[in-house]
Picture 1: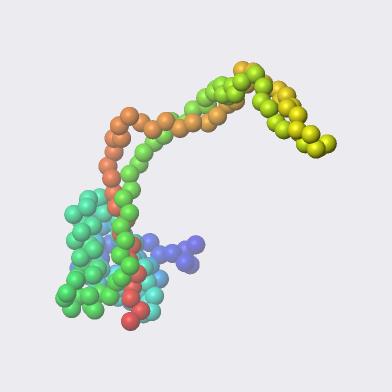
Picture 2: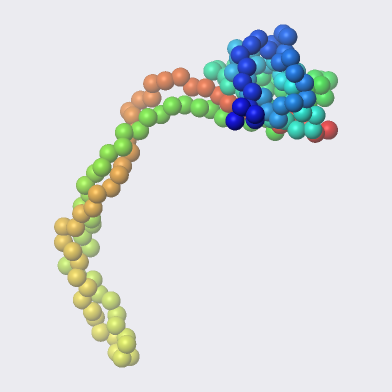
Length: 159
């Protein structure tokens, strides 16, 4: 995969990525992703591009989203990202258990009409008493302890 993916660990906020017009997508997991959006756009190919950003707090998401779209200012044309979408990520661990459940009893017998000979007659259908089955069940925790995070996605405008 090394011919398809390039991973770098460097400060991209001020000096940028050091490349231009080669990336299909850029993933930012940095403290101030909004400061690297212009550099990310420069690293992307001219006609295509997706940007992904991980942020630990909603305030950072808001600043990044504003930098991506900048409503009512020339920055919209400057950065040119659209379809901005954010998803919240929260780890929630479920306890999976096997449970033994008794199947409901619908009575001693059920009736079904039998009309093979044209005459309706009640037909006895036996019901298994005390039938049970094993099921997998998941139990959520009473309270979720953890830290949330956010993924923001945007598409580079083609125009």
